[in-house]
Image (cartoon, rainbow, N blue to C red; front, side, top):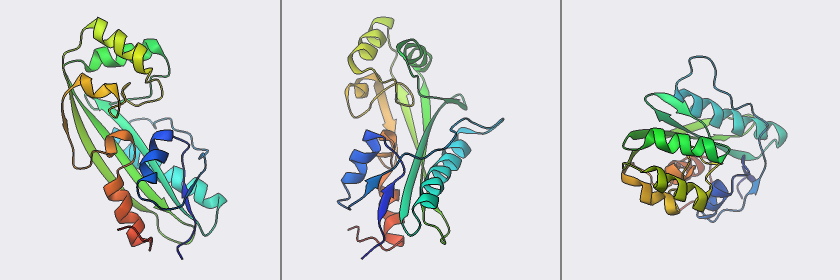
Length: 192
């Protein structure tokens, strides 16, 4: 029987994704400062935070394997955070209109006494040219204030794009399940 599994997140999006693997798990909020360090690139930030989240929760639950994940959206190489409110969401979507945005998603699997396993995914999203009215209607309808990039691709946000270029469609939602399943198999979990 594998060790207990914990998702180091209280994100409903990540929880719903992990449920697809049909493994029992619990969720714990990691206590991690998510502020970027000076000069930190978006891919390094996602990697560092995924590891920090997994390792912080693993330290509280010895013997458990903990999944940590983080996603950083980047426009012109600069990280975009979660908007937090309507005005910031409108500004983000306006800046991304007609542009290509890269999403760096990292997943880490940690357990005390074992090296942390990490995988990374990169997704490029091509936004169609959006009008101010389209942006306002979208933000009002979905209120994506807790989402990197100010959209929910699993919902109405898909209508904002011309294309998504990826190797794992779940990465854009916040937890790359292909990589997560591989890391779990390596740790001895019975994932098909």
